[in-house]
Amino acid sequence: MDEKTKGLIAAPLTGYREDGMVNLDVVKPYAELLQANRVAGVFVNGTTGEGLSLTLDERRALSESWVQAAPQGFKVMIHVGHTCQAESRALATHAADIGAAAIGEIGPVFFRPGSVEALVDYCAATAAAAPDLPYYYYHMPSMNQVLFPMAEFLRLADEAVPNLAGIKYTHSDSADYEQCLGFRDGKYDVLFGRDEFLIEGLKVGAQGAVGSTYNFMAPLYHALIAAFRAGDRAEAERLQAISAETCELIAGTGGFGSGLKALLKTMGLDLGGMRRPQVNLSPEAVTKLVTSLEDAGTLEYLNRPT
Image 1 (cartoon, rainbow, N blue to C red):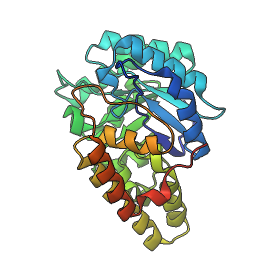
Image 2 (spheres, one colour; image 1 turned 30 degrees about the horizontal axis):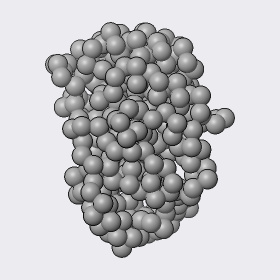
Image 3 (cartoon, rainbow, N blue to C red; image 1 turned 120 degrees about the vertical axis):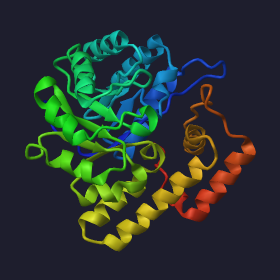
């Protein structure tokens, strides 16, 4: 399948107009901002992008816009998870038709599989709808409560899902993550999905990572990775502490996505509000957040506008 992902993959937010409709016009400047800050690609229509709050037509339109706007070498991965597998398969086929680099799928979020075997069967059916595209299982039990060891998933899926490329691993089980990295001599692309603990992934060999905060402060993570690889653990830990505090401060507003959008707006990228049931931050809350992030040292590492 595809070569392993190296570097940062952003989980982009979805832009909305004042009437609540998806704003496709922001995708091109968004892609340019990310590429200018050495982000390697995007995972479109995932959790941060409110993928499950969008209509199928909106998801298709966003996928097409990101593929069309992608600069050369910029990887566009499309999340195709849905509560109806027929729709997941249709989205997978669409992703292949428009030239996406890969697809990903979170496990069922309502009727959940009762065993790893059932989960693998489910993934195999979706992946088969786009057999020539790399397929990633999106492991995020905090959202869907599908909590199985991913090392066991790989063992069963290794033959059952021919186009399995790896896992988007958004969970805190470092031992399981490390086992996945080492499975069959490192066969699979296991993308680390917890920004606030990136250094823990690096310690066990992570090469690629997918996250929300790469949208606005990729320079911090580039510096963190460089310090870690240079053996400067103290500097890497310092930068990781800023990341962790930043994530905590944004989460503390009660509107993580809205907080991310407020920060991107300071860089000239206005993505509008959030779709219900998510909340929008008041101007006062935004001001308080920016002040807190300045005190935390975050603002020194914001993405540089193009």
